[in-house]
Length: 466
Image (cartoon, rainbow, N blue to C red; front, side):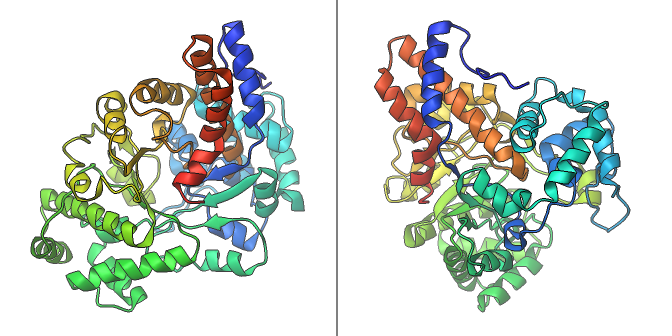
């Protein structure tokens, strides 16, 4: 059973304040400005295939934990790159999930999943091997009904706007289909150019060739390559994009002269970049993207500090983004200086920084965002979008950069049914933190109510221009 006061302070006076604050924001619309739901769901509006395809197979948080206990991804239905056999029996996957659900004790995944079971499907008993088939049958029965189709759930979840994330090589056909369908749900794309700005991305040279073809320009020349970005960014913006997103292994930025940048680009196309040169090129492209943002008003998101696809074996069998992204230590003060020297004092630019390195919150990120007009701090991400991670974020950053150099919350997920739960957790944690400030005399209660509304809704909407 879900406890009504979960995540609120234990002390009674602070708990009362948290509860009252939460009641003012719990039903606000959801603004989901960065995520990875599939736009095809909303374009075609077909029923989700089965409970396993909804809760297990697409969710990194779920299958990485099961993998850690020796359960192969093929047993969970995760597709193989070579099209080889994987489990297709949804009930069998579901029973395996239930048998191992105890592994999620104490994790945010358990909280999100149980809240989705209860509030989306009305299932309030404990999920276990004994209840697995009952849960499966009930959810499958629900999924066959019109009110559980993607668009209906979108509306039921009170989602005001949601952003998906696509490669510049994507033709955005699903977004076009949504746009012409007559449905009123706001689903926008975001420009994620990693495949054509990272020389170490598989097939980089071929990707750039395709990139140029899509933009109808010669992208294998340096100026043609930059023009291709401008053309594709405009194409994305016409499909609702308000942001670009950059998943680099480091936070390194560079502001090279154009001849040096062109030389690095030529080496990248020829496959002759060293690791350091590849990192320099990625860093220069962040500054180029920031300058383009000054032209087209797209928000620039930087997601650095992840050693992505850490397992070579899993990468070879299942491809990218299969739960093996591992945090690394990240330097922001030196790494961001070239970009900040170029554009950091431009208040009309918004650069949102994310991190997987919590040690940098108070030492680097909050001081940087607390002085540079262009910078804002993104919310805790990936391993830290938990109640504890969110609380630490507020404690370590608020004293230096306040609330208004942050951008609210985003769920960053493929797991559609977890979106309301994730936002609910963030709202509860923020209300608990604000209640502590009120009860210790650092914030008036009426101010806390205004901040709670900002953190839950207004900041994300403003920062992402939604």
